[in-house]
Amino acid sequence: MGKKKTTPIVINNVEYNLEDMTEKQQTMVNHIVDLDRKIGSALFNVDQLQVGKKGFENMLIQDIKSSQEETTEKE
Image (cartoon, helix red, strand yellow):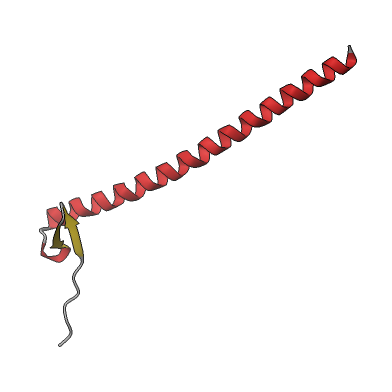
């Protein structure tokens, strides 16, 4: 007979088997896993937003410098 597969879950440095948990506990584990995924995704999005913002700031600074140089050249 094959060995029964289990899913180990580590909580406070103690290993538990997901299959040995109650349905309520398994639901909580699923929420935690999903929230971890969402937090990771949100952090990824924040990184993208910060880089995009910095890019627009740099473009604005360059455009202002170019406009000032054009104005200075016309005078």
